[in-house]
Image 1 (spheres, rainbow, N blue to C red):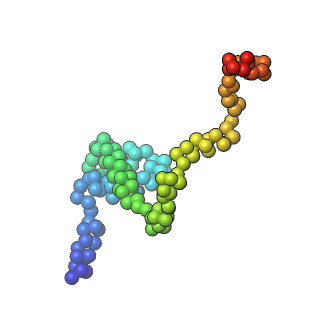
Image 2 (image 1 turned 90 degrees about the horizontal axis):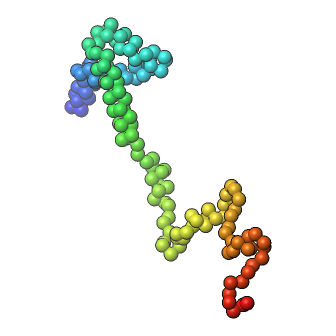
Image 3 (image 1 turned 180 degrees about the vertical axis):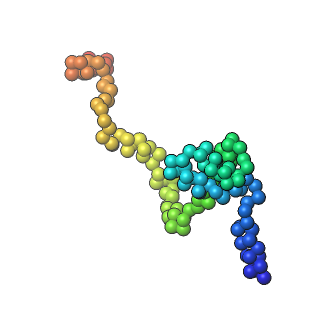
Length: 141
């Protein structure tokens, strides 16, 4: 009984598509190969019209762009994590809040050898210009 269903589905798959957009989608790999070999889209359309395709160039162009979008969307839907990636995600350990350092990124940036002059501001202009520190504390005068 299962063979009857499979044979029926095989017949449907082997039959010519009923709509022009389905026909374009089924011929898309061949059309892409012709375009990649240097042929223009209009040349491909003209060759297919000589073979009996009844569609305008604008319709052909739109059908090609829609078929390309549909194959791109279908390929992105099928992307799933491989079992090894899923296993790695499960094995990653999340540290408790007490062990995490919220300033770890800043500490890494401070330790790195950044290009340029490492400027750290000084307390006063006298220290910068004359190399002397003038006390501003009234008790030490």
